[in-house]
Image 1 (cartoon, rainbow, N blue to C red):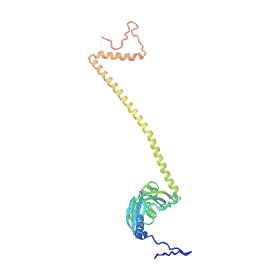
Image 2: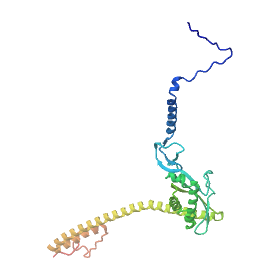
Image 3: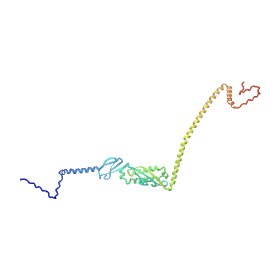
Image 4: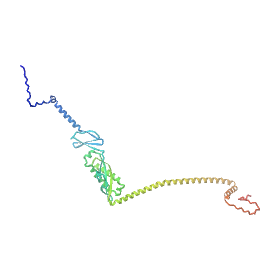
Amino acid sequence: MALQTETHEPEAGAVPPSPGPSPWFVGHRRAWIGGLIALALAGYLLTGIFTVAADEQAVIRRFGRVAARLGPGIHYRLPWPIDRVDVVKTTSVMKTGVGFDLLEGDARGAGVEILTGDTNIIRVAMTLQYVIRNPAAFLFDIENPSALVGSIAESVLTETVLGMQVDEVLTTGRLAIQERVKTRTQAILDRYDSGIQITSANMMGITFDGSVAQAFQDVANAGADRENKINQGRSYANDLLPKARGEARSMVLAAQSYKEQHVAEAIGNTTRFLELLAEYNKAPDVTRTRLYLEAMEKILPKLKKYVIDSEHGQKPINLRLGPTPP
């Protein structure tokens, strides 16, 4: 007996049944879900990789507590919300003003009013520059670092100026004030464990009451005149001293030449006298007559001579001068 297969045609307008999941997918469902979970976990763990630049330092907080301090390079921390990373630039120089607003950028006419040791009121404006030395302390141990540095510096500045005279503040004491404000402010910040390093303190301007401005200007002018006179005197001395030294040397050389000349003449005269003395000791009369005649030879040509004949021509005239030979 032959089997007959009945085929049921779908009615018009009926929705055919959807095919079920692939048997392969059903067999690997758990593997797919595990792979997706592993991929998500890997992506989550990779979010812990971070980089710190050469001019930066990083602070890792684990559940809000500082866990590590890291320098430049590639690092890893546990992903959020376990670890948090705060990165700060440790080479960036920050500024704060004392007595004026840095945003305005003009310290003229500004400053904090301070009483000097001689009871004068002046206004002083300063700027301080600082860098981050300890990122963890800077981030979590203090609030508003700029205001903290400014208030401490203002207190130190007031204390310093109070022990000085106003003319010292305006002239020779500026460098000492800057150095003391820098060192004392740093000492107080270290006591607070602020993580801040002061690099410089500079006075931007000093002003005072207009009633005494002219007096201080006169003092400054007098000081400038004094320096000018001193410089003129030094210039005159520098010009005169070489000339005086040259003239003195010329006089010394002339005196030495005069001395040598007269010493040589004296030695020559002494030699001649000794030679003449030796001849005189041998023949005193002859030597005396010769010296007399030599002297007359030098003297008589310069004189007018008158010869008087006392014998009235009866005897020959003897023109020989000197004693008559026997």
